[in-house]
Length: 590
Image 1 (cartoon, rainbow, N blue to C red):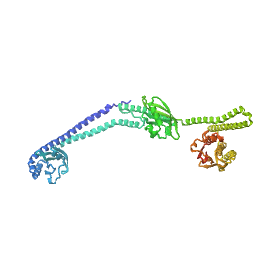
Image 2 (tube, helix red, strand yellow):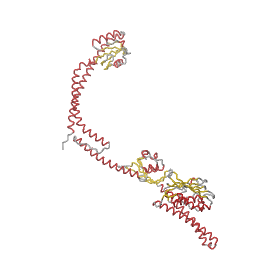
Image 3 (cartoon, rainbow, N blue to C red):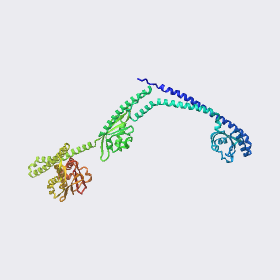
Image 4 (cartoon, rainbow, N blue to C red):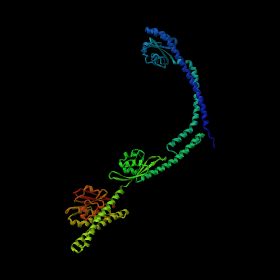
């Protein structure tokens, strides 16, 4: 196995190069310091000259001999190769060695003049636009009677100042260039040598950050970097395995939550929604992405649910309750609240599972109503039969006239019992055959079934002098069970006859509208009040109990019609107003 190079031997030459470059930098700094020292010495010399010149013009400033000041500036400036300028406190130039002072603008804003007019020595290196050259300016204040009345400025070209240090700076600069070139070459080599494996590590880390955990780093660099690459490869493999495990668990959890019929809500300790499954979205009519992060009372405006959540958050163990969600219709929910803990056992929220038991409640209510109705319907004729039998036993049997009347009444109640039992058996038979798929349906004429229903009810219609009218196309066909459809139509026609006045007309019609065959039974009887329309197809439900009993009805006819329509894959509906008649409609798929 090839011996790995240690990182020390890769970095040590670089350290030597850094030392070399540092020496070069020190040389450059020394040259710069020399230039700066030259500038400082020149500034001090200019300051001394300005102080001496200030003494020469002090009297002339007092007498305002500005022409003499200007002449003196030109003489002194020419003799020492320096620009000499005198400016008054207001910035007006009264003397200049290189220019006519009357043609110069005010110097009040020149930095060095401003400093001098504030009783300080102004030293500035800047570009002079009037001389189009870089100059070193030194200005000193001229004070009279404790007040600054003018400023004397000395200026010298920078290139003249730096001529003395030029040769030294050139030599040091040339050395610095050589050092920089050498340092750049060695530095590039070392940087390439060390940076390549680091760049590979960076590339691998970026791939891992983007989720590409299958990528593997090469291990052919130094011992330390190879060790780091191997550690990163092991880390990536372990992360990949854990991510796959988490992803599988998440997918399984998502699948379970999505397929659950129970509504599931995960909430944090502040009652904010963390997770919500599809069943809960459908139950409360909300979108999961909009509900997440919101308080449950804000996302789901149900007081009882909010109260249950608060109770579950406050409890240390699982809690259960039954809540009602108001709506159209109301929903009955069995709620279970279980504490949620993190891996450390700390409470992080609560899991609420809601089981919709509305159908169970409705079935329970229907069962109770059914038992009560059956008991009531059977008790009345049985009680009557029992009473008449006791009366006959006590001696009425020897009275032929009363005995015959009592027997007729008992036969009537017996027939009523038989009719109730027959209707119940019919309902049970239809339900059982529908569940088992035993109801035979075939394409047949709708009109033939309706004609048979009219014949069945013809006698009763004649007794009340009620006319039965049929309107149905000859060619109208549907996939039906003719016997059951005849029974449903006969039940509706029979009801229409019962609740119509003598001399009225009951209409039985059928037509094809869209994809449905509609069979209507229309009467002009007493009609049905609006509050009863939603319940008239329930078993034993009767709008007018006294009249229904008088007519001999048991309250099962419309329930049988509903079940027959459902067995055909259709439905039944009603249109009615109190006092204006009714229209019962059977909707069948064509």
